[in-house]
Amino acid sequence: MKKVLYLFIFLSAVLVRAQNNDRSRDSIAKYTQQDFSQMKEQLGITIPNRPGPSGNPADPNAANTDENKVGSYSLPDPLVTSNGTQVRTEKAWWDSRRPEIVAQFEKEMYGHVPNNIPDVRWTVVSEKDTTAGPYPVTETLLIGKVDNSDHPDIEVNIELLIGLPKDTEKAVPLVTRFGFINWPFGPPPTEPNSYFMSSYEPLWKQQLISQNWGYAILVPSTIQADHGAGLTSGIIGLVNKGAHRSPEQWGVLRAWAWGAGRAMDYFETQPKIDASKIGIEGTSRYGKAALVTMAFDPRFSLGFIGSSGAGGASLLRRNFGEMVENLASSGEYHWFAGNFIKYASSLTVDDLPVDAHELIALCAPRPVFISVGSPFIEGNWVDGKGMFLAGLHASPVYALLGKKGMESEEYPVIGRALTSGEVAFRQHAGGHSTGPNWSTWIAWAHKYWDN
Image (cartoon, rainbow, N blue to C red; front, side, top):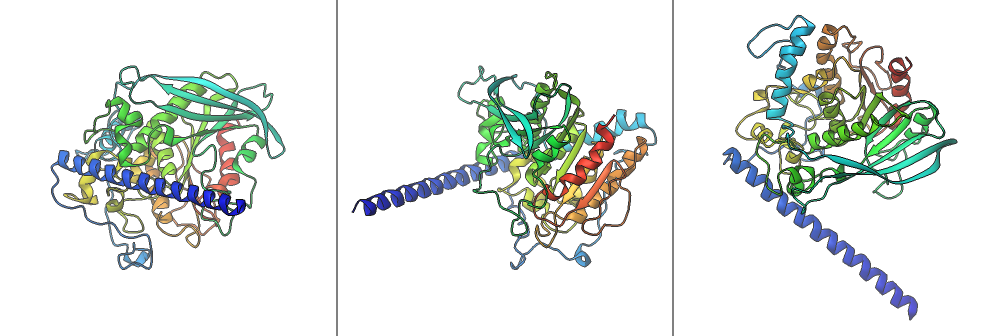
């Protein structure tokens, strides 16, 4: 009888949790739709958004994955100003064209970062000795508390984990990952059955520590929630004192990038971290955030941009995989400025003054490694070729600044690494992860961090 009672209690608890999760999802969906509609009202958009294609290949409206159906498109030239002037010198790039591209991205896509953001104070929560594989590591958990004295109703406490080689006597390079301190999806899966992970190489922490480099994990959700319902909370909501955004204000990707900048502020105060050699890494939406971070914060010296797709490194004008209509929908609009919604309703992607190759160009002359998984495991939604082409079309800016861009104009076969230039690319044979590219990235990074 006791066993039956315990089973009943257990199943009742599971059911309650499931019901609470359902209510939470319904509430998030409700308030997200309200915020989305409110932004469209601010923009004066009364027509429905054009629907984006489906990521399910079996659906009637499936996204295009046929190169023969991509069609033609015209990209804005990163070395021609809006008034048609050709950019021929480094000075013209830095003084004229680059600020113009930054302004276009800020107004139309990622949003402006407000001037009145309160300070962040970092506090050590705990420190412990552990290992990454066979290598001893000292891990420090920190909380970055944002000053909310002007609006106490909203708290923002940024979580950051730093791992350094134990007893290191000199400042070491460090890679910052947008991700999770604790994997939230159950036991970490393994390749080849996994969409996410790779079991064929040591985990990324071990690989970095083996090079006498450090690692950090920055938790994006502690900076800003990943849904439209959260835009009146988090750092965006705190700055707005709980009010809705205006159409040109920052979206979630820019907020996450701002959080990475505050982590960099902390790194610059630490004698055991070489702040001149900090990399930024992320996959999927966090890959988008990593690229936005590189583009807008020149203190990050290397980028490792994993499967970032549309809204990240993939060309938006290319009809393949995810499209602008998906990004500007109620499910993903929160990543961007409200103005971006226009390009899936009253305007089209061809009206957008910028594209992904110019976001990569904003990183120049700093090196960027573009990573993508196999279409047979990861699928085609993120458009690996679109990311390669964006890197290729960013390369003239690198050349203007005296650096080498993409080494080949031909899309490489799976596994071939294009790593001789400052714009690198490799499509690995795994899933939606940077995992199988870590050793390739590390070998490439040594070119820049060994001096």
